[in-house]
Length: 305
Image (tube, rainbow, N blue to C red; front, side):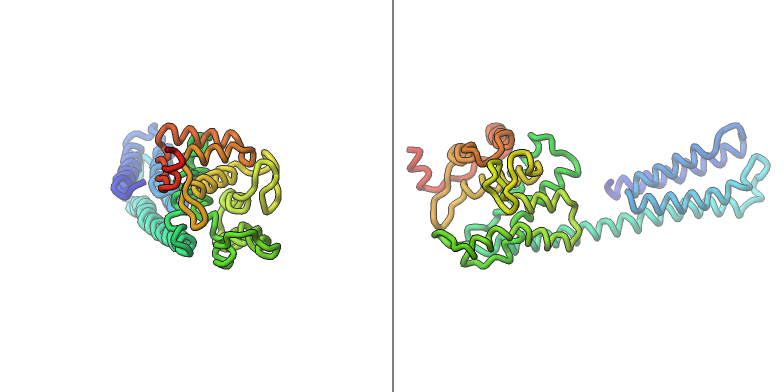
């Protein structure tokens, strides 16, 4: 919830609480606690999880203290209870400010950390500039067509952005080699997904994000790595990142080959190594314009002609 909306909601909750107490004093048959709990619920909704817990605890405890003596005969003499009630909702308002501020700072630090990691991944070679963001954009478009929503969509974007973080630990000579890799070099390539997971585990990412990074080089026919998973064994988010990653690689220029057209890339992806329903979702995203057609190089243009 934006700060411009949060403050009116909290003020409205405090007003509702005050009105509930006044109404109960004048008309005892009006229930007090449902209205007070509605106020606390509004504060929780405005503050989110952390701020909401603090607000609920502070408001409920202090309002409960006041509730022992607030009644139809209390009148204005019980000013201590009135102060306790007001203090409860003042504490809730403080929780709004503190919880929202801390959450905002945490999100900003998290976003900066991701940007730094992505910049480090993409800065290793001239041809990899912007690669992680493109993969994330393609994965998001594919995910929408496969019903990936809400928190899972956030996990998908993170997994796609950070899928190659383990490549930071692979030597540039191996990554840029044009010929056949030696057995040790091949092993260095095949362990980079797990190395990426090891880095991200230190940050505390959700399991879905870690699985998307760990398994994004698996293939439907079992020829992938690191685990050689077959068919449905690969988690959905990892399948989506795998297809988005391969599509991005095929449709961008590389030192050893020109970029392919989107149609050429999809034809290769349909060759059996990838999951048909994920490739179908990619095709639908391309046809709808949700994924902009990648710009082909001059060699690809000559092939089409």
